[in-house]
Length: 292
Image (cartoon, rainbow, N blue to C red; front, side, top):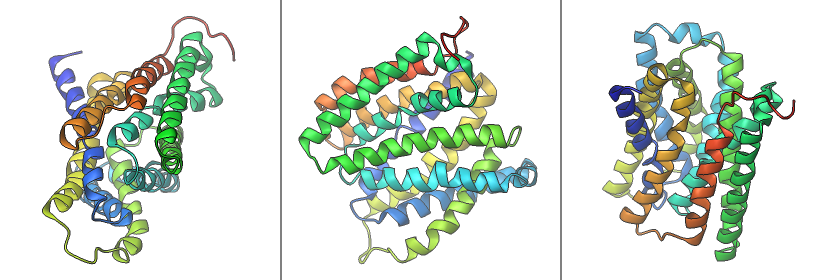
């Protein structure tokens, strides 16, 4: 990988490692619909003009039906559940469970006809990852049974992420990622607008809450998606997908340093298991598969 490739990869890891910090700050004062609406509205305001400038917006529009489904699976469902879950869970635990996306993506790849998904290496990764998930959920539930709904919501989000990417990749081949996500964010803005305006705060939020929400939209959504698609062109999809590992570590570290979150037993045990499992589950083996 070139120096430029490493630099872009590290930048995306940072940009997608900080949203959990921003959400944790914002949810103390703002409603989930308002936070998510602000995020997708800002993202659409940046990505749609960029797609228009690159003349990729209108070609992508022919896939609007699939982009609508993608918007619901990639943004509406997961960003609602993830934001809400941060009222009960630490940012480190949330980021760790989202790091299971490659595991679920491997399941979808298998049922989509990718026979390499059943290779022993990837099966090993899935097994290790599932053990990590079970331990995280189990330990966090022992700490507080009320966390179960939030934990389940984050896992549904990871599942939804994986499904969304698998679906849009097959249904909108060749369409610009910037255009697809810009349109999806525009659709999501329309969906969230009425809920956002009926859930406005009763008093003026703090500067920290406002800046965190703006940061979610500008840094973690618009800028992060834009840079990610540059990374895709620079280093390819296989390597770019590995960004889930540094951004999880960044989220855990920022939570401990800036939010005074504890390095819990769930994180200490689950972090290596989930990251190792996701790594091996996402590897494309050269050797023959063990099952179809």
